[in-house]
Image (tube, rainbow, N blue to C red; front, side, top):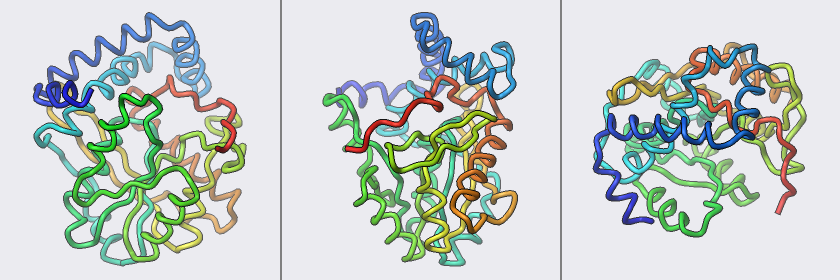
Amino acid sequence: MLVLYRLVSRWPLALLHGAGALLGWLTWLASPTYRRRFAGNARQAGYTFAQVRGAVAHAGRMAAETPRLWFGPPVSIAWQGREQVQAAYAARKGIVFLTPHMGCFEITAQALAAHFAPEYGPITVLYRPARHPALTPVVETARRREGLATAPTTLAGVRQMLKALRAGRAVGLLPDQVPPEGMGLWTPFFGKPAYTMTLAARLALQTGATPMLVWGERLPRGQGFRLHFEPLSQLLAPDLDAAVAQINCEMERLIRQCPQQYLWGYGRYKQPRPEL
């Protein structure tokens, strides 16, 4: 599998995105469950399928571009809001980067690591180990890159992220990812209760780190990516329940900026799995 990933990583990004778009539609056509969840999640947010149909292809592009981002040559990246990121790093209070399942979230951590880690230390990102054994060496090899540290979704990983923030470094996570049972709250997401992680809010509240929103826009015709950074629309609430709800609202706001690149097929409203 690692050999295959390295081979595909040499393909032009435009070719990968073209193949990925086809893969996205084939997956959508082949899975009635995926189609129902995609349409249901979009409808919950107030969108018709026609309004977000582009997200079908973008889901496939996300999968197809991964080998290039993990093992291939650098891709073109534009920055929007970079000065705010620089100011947050310079404050040395730590940064909690928050991104939904939208666009290319792999490129955001890579770009931050490449540009800010030499001066401010590595960014620590939360990840789940690969579920398929064949992918384990691929993921482990890809994650070993300069300026990027990884933290597993365990108590040890939480302690690792707290330590990084208290040292004035940055962490990154997807707060719309469904956490294990006992590690979240049922909080509205597009008006429907969704089991939502408390970790993102806890990290910021316990350390005084700066929460910052980020997402990586996938540009057309394989031109690369544009990173969007912005602060929360208002200061994070000091109460945990309110802060979790507030972060969900911020994720909704980001998603509405580009609903065609959100993963509407993600099981956002599923029951949490038991903690291992």
